[in-house]
Length: 585
Image 1: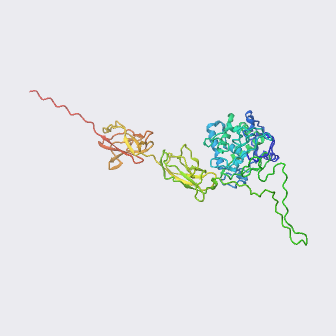
Image 2: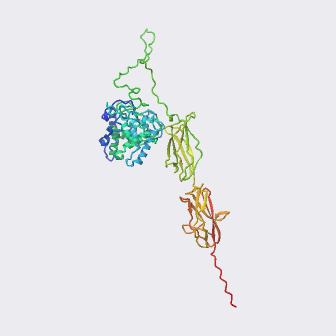
Image 3: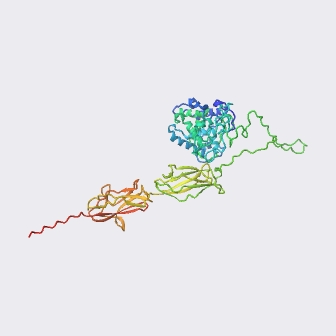
């Protein structure tokens, strides 16, 4: 949490009177532990033995934000509302990158630990209480906090005593540990719980993707099933061993379950109150040991009131006494409130196509081109390290490689984000894909991709046996063909087989060979045929009526491949009688 934390009693044994009264006031209306099924209340929960290991919690029981969620249900509207100072229903808005990290962590745990049943809303609740959602989403394109978020040093003076375990690598403190990052892990816990959530080869507690995935694994250990209230309570208590903390996280969990929405990075609402009695979040973290602006350290003299404005002198004084300017201590100069430099995302004004070209592919095939989008400032300057989200829209089975319909990519040094390869589905037609900037509201950029039906450009027979039949009989051999496209097997290609009248007249004939329909009736055109996985198509049995002669069977496919096969219907030859023996002389 904020580096300007004050002190609170060790292991959360005491919280501020304000926070305690606030929690009690809302207990009846928002109590999370008692439900319609009469399950155990959060207040009755006791930490499991595992919860007391490694100093008792993931955070070293550092201070946390005590703001309660609004009584009013969250508004899932996509409106962003006010910025960091916003309150009320804006509490339901979670910064885009932070929300993305929570959902990705849930998806990962659903695969690796399905029995845990981790909801992303639990990570959001803990992230809210621990760091105010990474200080309203002040993260870069990779999800790393713009500035480090540090808790107080755990020196045993009002907190747990945890001497340095990382040589200051994460918290910059080589004497004592401090909670670090959006999910406030202490270094000794991160050493075994840390995860690489954004696949960059590093485990960084200051990165929201890494921290969220680590928090998910931490909450899912000990075979806990978070769909069960008892295990859920134990998991939360293991994160920060405080009953007040448990109650608070449960309230935020239920609040986020009722609805939430994405807001641009850096615009999330910030908390106002901390469990150690300190003030709420400032726009940016401060350095450990340095008092935040507007906060008077304990034991410091109270500031003197400003001089009163000037007032008229007594009659005869001749005028008024001008007001005295506020005194400035020697060596001090008035300073403006600290400002946070804009992130690359903040500078993006619009999106431009970066030479994508025409997007066309046959059903079932990969597209030869990939979508390329450039982020630019108002002046047209490219912006690097910005997260761009690509989304496949509409009713289609076309996806990005891996079966995903959404992909997020950071722009490179040229400000260009290249989407993963597109894989065409079986549904043909036009597909719309949209590029948007994660964490900033600028118009999206739409791309059109075309999926054509599977095609073949060549058809050949697989055998060369003559196709002959006697009138009224059945052909001994069935017709089988193989389809290819540019030399490769053409599977799933639609085909039509027709017994045509002549080479010049492709309409179906009314005499000669024929197929039989399901009802046994004569059929001379077959539709709805498709080649198999090997590109093969084997036609049904052929029959002949009483007409003799040479007939043509024409097979056509999508893509223009055509093959014409000759069929011969002829009467069986009869042997000539042997000549009679000449009479003897």
